[in-house]
Length: 161
Image 1 (cartoon, rainbow, N blue to C red):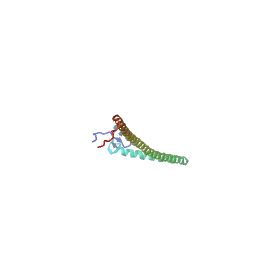
Image 2 (spheres, rainbow, N blue to C red):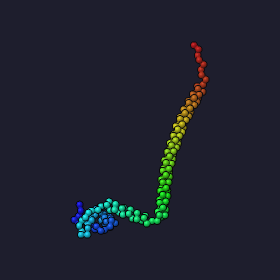
Image 3 (cartoon, rainbow, N blue to C red):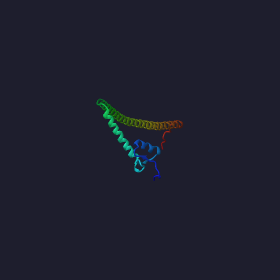
Image 4 (spheres, helix red, strand yellow):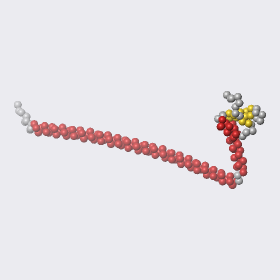
């Protein structure tokens, strides 16, 4: 739905002017009028971005045509050097991530092994404690039997019939 007299842009205005008007008015579309004020079309943000990108590409090509050959070779060499540096950085990042993952796996394995060792030590200590208590109970029972026998005196000889 468009208001009866929407904001518009003249056909002779630049892409940048249209983008500014659309940005300032928060418009997604903008009617285009010829010199007589007759609507000749509608542009949207994507149309203008495509036109701006094409214009920037044409300007870049014109600038590159003006650059001396040795400067173009220098720029190309610098671009290649930067690409190699990016690749080296990407390779180093991948190696670091791989080493970090391997370290985490080793660390988790060590932590699990230590936890298992602690649990085994606890189970062994509990078993030793239980065995010691059982041995002490047996010793106490034997001592109690010995004390009871001493109190009773020597055993009576068996009676003959």
